[in-house]
Amino acid sequence: MARGDASALGALYDVYAPLLLALAQRILGSRSEAEDLVHEVFLEAWRHAADYDPERGTVRAWLVLRTRSRALDVRKSAAVARTVRVGDSAWFEQLVGSGDGLAPSPDRERVRRALLALPEEQRAVLLLGYFEGLSSSEIANRMSLPIGTVKSRVAAGLSRLRAALGEEVPR
Image (cartoon, one colour):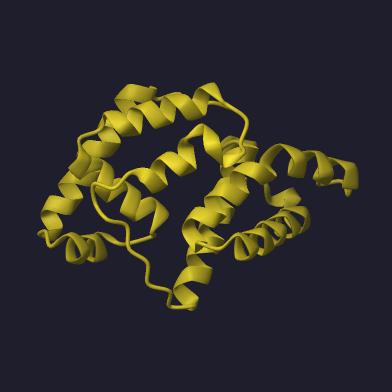
């Protein structure tokens, strides 16, 4: 793709578009906005393919990070306020469950199980931070908790996820 091979872009799109669309739709709440955003991410990936550094992570991680960042930018710039009720995991199941149109994946199932195994208070702060893009202070306000409690729950949750998934990042 970095050499201008359009078929490489098509192959990349075929592999990663469903995952990126699910992530963008979860963050934005709108399929049409998510489709537009995913299209923009792939155009950006095409233009900046030479910037990809395999030492810093997988292509999948590179695309997911770009998608998440762009989706959070769109959401914040539009000043859209969305809430996720703590304790309600239906949206989480929709995202990581088998009903979202994504092919089953052993890695995805491992992450889903690891997240579901976390205590609810740790899972809630991690999901609010990742999918809602909230800062620790915003999570503290949303959940009516001291910021120190939020930070300690994030640290404990991430530590448990690392232990459950192992330090190795799948490629």
